[in-house]
Image (tube, rainbow, N blue to C red; front, side, top):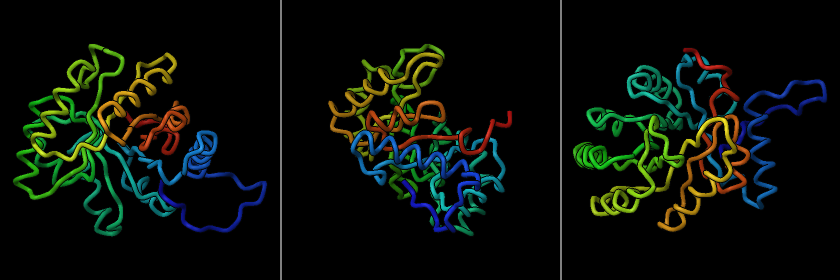
Length: 232
């Protein structure tokens, strides 16, 4: 997790910022789980938010951001990273195969590899661009027809194909079904990752990131708890 920028000590009457609040909750969950907070990367999901909102968090010390769409990230982040070269941006939304090369050029990690055709497109793009981008395989952990993600039964074959293509798969990602307890789905994703020798777990959002950290998340994707309600 990113280290906060130094700031004057707060008095009991000073409000805590959303970023400091989320960081404190991650740290508390890490203490309970006997984990080091440095083992959890906070991905601030800035989809639909203007560059000014991103820069406000950058000024507070946040350095890793998440976007859902290639086109939106292309419009927002080149100028931000020109001013702040240490800012990283992760793709946390679905990726069309025809956008694979744009994604490889722009993003520092892609959390949504979910099918063989996209794998082939990413392998071709990485070879062409000469850049290896860490990948997470998105698993349809709740077997929901309306959601993207690789079916659990198809995961071994997709991982084998990724290894054959020498793609840098770092872990698994999931979005549990809405409206029910997320913990069993996080635990299942952690088991699948362990079974396949993968250390990365991209799981947990604003409503459930503390549970995700307790169950081993290495990346939590937090949007509304940091930026407020999404625009659109």
